[in-house]
Image (cartoon, rainbow, N blue to C red; front, side, top):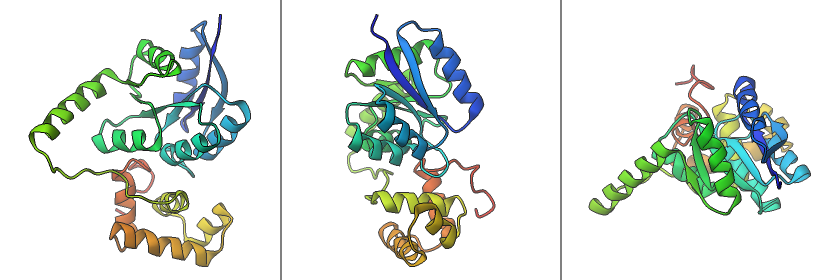
Length: 225
């Protein structure tokens, strides 16, 4: 029997273990790696070329959205299923824009998670049942009320997305520079460009934007809000 190779990218160990135990019960699914942040996910995908990645949307250092964009440039055949505890339309749109072919709520049943992996492996898309209903409702509303604004992530470069996440996680310019291997002045330039593109002019505003776009979870940086 052909086994579908799967990589799990999730920063919470207890959640990651839960997915692993769930998938290990399936004869046709094989877990070939686990990652606790977006950067590790990219490295493992390049190394093992899994057929499907279960990718948490909000992870430290590099979120699932940007990790998906970057890994698909290197391994375009990999299919990404985004994981989130939130069903906001903006999260779903941003996940699809990043290249994900499905979106699963973390409370999705084990049956539907396994079904999703098999579906996307076959080249199809899959959304948690409640998400699918939500999207159908939104599509009907959009048809009835054209011109509604959407909340997609602005067109930021990969580096700007990385800097935005680290800013929202409370990292100072020097810390961000060390983390990304660039100069402090370069970080400052990226910060200026972010504020200009987003029309946001303080760190608290950038943090709120990162939360609303699903780049970080609200619990990551609470004191600044």
